[in-house]
Amino acid sequence: FCPATIIIIAFVRFQKISLAVSFKELRLICIVGFISTLQIITFIYGAQFTTGGRVTLFLFSYPFFVAILAPIFIQEERFNIWIIIGCTIAISGLIFALYNRLAAGAMKGDIMELISALLYALYIVVNKKLMRRIHTWKILVWALIISTSLYFICSLIFEKVNLSAIRHDAWIALAVQVVFTTCFTFLSWQYLLSRHSAAKLSPFFFAAPIFG
Image (cartoon, rainbow, N blue to C red; front, side, top):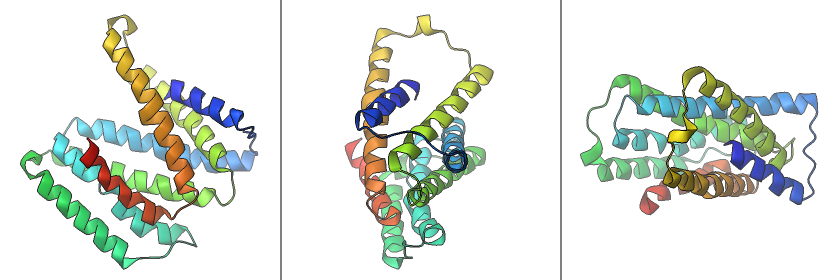
């Protein structure tokens, strides 16, 4: 996330957008940053205790939570029963497609992944709500700075990293993740979220398994 954050900051500054925020705005953005951090932590930690198929299933349940939470927190969002039904059908399709991979997983891992999906939905909803008060790119940049700092602290506490042991192809894979998985995804998602309904936009995430 650190290299991606630097690239995104450069992109935003190239657009001649000031990143200055008030203390009140920063406090609100901190909520987004903390939610994002907890979502990634629960996702990574929970994946150790369940199967890949179940991780995918629980992760892709987040549009269902967005459809429920968005009308509660965002005034312009409306509860749409058809979106709920559509998400339910999509999740059912995922269960069918992943049936052979849904081996029994530990309850601990399943719960952590479900919490991660719920946190990601909450991250999207809170992010969308703040866009009414704070510039889109300011939210993204400062939330990334906050979450990246927290990831770094957690890494120092819980991990031991030997950079010399990392192979060259791993560095190449990391570079691809930085540019495409992180930079392009975060920028495009933030752009789309600022212009469209969170509940209507999130179900497009169900298309991801088709591409990978």
